[in-house]
Image (cartoon, rainbow, N blue to C red):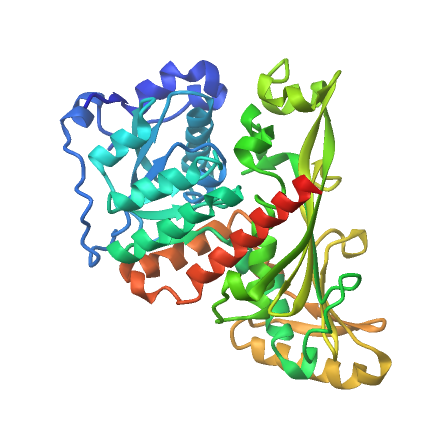
Length: 482
């Protein structure tokens, strides 16, 4: 099988027009192999010695979202510095390489990745034939992602994939099949759930699961759910300190999904992870999706050109184009019950953040107290945790919350609390606010434990992934037919 392979310097020089100045000025490490040496090197066998210091050998397949690069933003012990990349030559690959290049050349804590780049329109087939590593990393191209996951697992390769794994209800059986293959072949297949590592969600989970603070979830009421979360993302944003372009296919909901099936995956994951820690959920028995709604964000042609570089809307968007703008159906709401607890979630995409960051709001209402994460102007757009309670329960609930935060100092020294009007504010030292991009390294570290011992993955992870994707796909399906 013929590979179109380039040495790193040659590839970046050939691609300078697309990469821009950053790619044209790319530096080649002294130890980098020449193109001739690259061709002569046999592919690395897929069976890796888990006792090796670098036992995870990454294969980045068809990177089409910047999250693929964020897996490599930090060098993580156990991950080999040489990474194979399989993708068609085009803007998606070039954008990925530019981010890796930035990581390698940044002045503070630079990385030292070495890339073996394989350019071919048959990237999946050629990757499977060569199998130059043992972990396939996937991000972007959401509708066809589950097929690549299954093919990788069938080839005996572990998978670390960005969300979402599926965006359509009709692909739910394929998701179940992926887990069956992983079990049969004793492979690690893991969903990149970065928000579990956000310090405010960790604290919120701790307080919700202290009965003396929270009590139990309030009775089910669609008008006042026990759990309400709203996530607001923004189309125009910066990544790794630079403006992040969006490929035109990003706006194709048939290809990439709507808000709930994409970023909403995190919301459903957090709701279940917080309410039922360590408990396996059965989507057939425990989940009741009640309703779904959808609405568009209007994107002008000028905005579309600004973020994609394209001067016209692609034909795939024509059903939603109205003159000089199109309706981007990226916003969803879902209402459902999980084990009798009422949950309401909203996933929203706006054009640009007024502060340069995305926003997260989450409130868990209990019979003793509510535990809330807020990120408004009053909090200077920094997520903060608050505990509130009715006057009759306030003293005991706040005392219990202070006791819980005191115990948290064993893991997070410096966590504290302070009065804030009628609420209790949980104070968080800045050193724990590492940000979304840093959470990818934390997910990789978690994944490495399961890579060494796939059977060590908690038994609740896979059934809860099924429950999560049942909610997201069913919610969007219901919103489209509403």
